[in-house]
Amino acid sequence: MAFEFDDPFPPPAERAFADFPPSLARLQEVYAGFVPSFEMRRESLSEYVRNKLSEISPTSNADAIRAPTGHSLSCDVDLLQRHFAWSATCFVRAYSLLLTYVIISRRGLSSWATVTGYYSRFYSAKALANLCLASWVDVDLRASNGGPSHGKNWKFLVYTGAEHTRLIEGSRLPTSMVPNASHERWWRLLDQLRHIPDLAETDPMTTALQPWPFTSERRNEVNYSDVWMEGFPELEWFDTSVEQMLAHMSFASARQDDDFTDIDRYFVGMDPESADVADYYTDPAVALWQTVIAYLDLVGILVPAQNVVTTDKLIALAERTLGSDSPRTLEGLRLALRERDSAT
Image 1 (cartoon, rainbow, N blue to C red):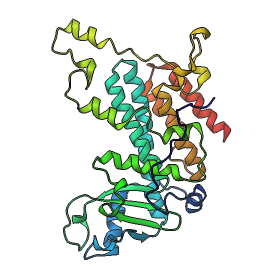
Image 2 (spheres, one colour):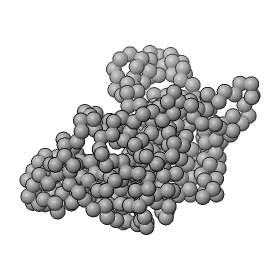
Image 3 (cartoon, rainbow, N blue to C red):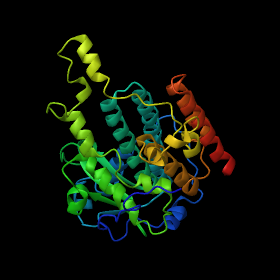
Image 4 (tube, rainbow, N blue to C red):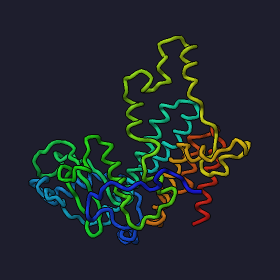
């Protein structure tokens, strides 16, 4: 059974670049033969870009990328390594935050669960974009060799398109790609991935590329609002007695130990008369899990010869985080991840 959103694959925003995103076939071509290597000290993508800027124009880093199309780079093994390393790092953070979401939800801490779920989605957006060879990069140009001080943390977009790899200074980008909110830059970049022409519209990928259920608007409301009962509402009665405070907190029901990795296992032990498939498809944990599957599917297509993100590591993280708190969920994760290995 497929996910049934009002619009399963919402129309993406207007394409911001004529040459991005590239096709899946093009990405496979670029990644062909690439095998990630272990690095004792991992250079960041920001450091990589900063060094490239020094090579491009030692005396004026900014001038070399003032053209609307930016500066053309070589998508060499070093750049692939940087993208993949950051992509995998963001994915593991997203997965760890999913596990943390489960733990917090089991305690009935719904506001913190909302914020945690949002950050799982946010890191997934970074992971998917970098796997597709696109990333926002903040660079301190004052650290570049020989160049004048242009101020700290210039924003750049680096992406590999249909033919070229480009480095573009943020102020030269289409206005649709440079909103005021820093997180929104990543959501706009993720939205562009829906233009990949040969990307399969699977349930996991559909879920990964749409905003439900952890939006930045909801995160901001919970995390920052000073309005009564809007930000962290379960904590709003902290200034009463201990008994009243705890009674008020109890309105947020604790999450049951449901196996969100499989719809059949999700309803095991439940009276069939009271089982509603909508409960599964509207469970926020399912959306986070489907995004994990989308990433693993894409890694299998683009970087099959890698041992950075492995089943054993993901299971070990689940065991470390969930412990004995959610035995059904933990067993479901083990089964689902091992079944994926068997299928491939």
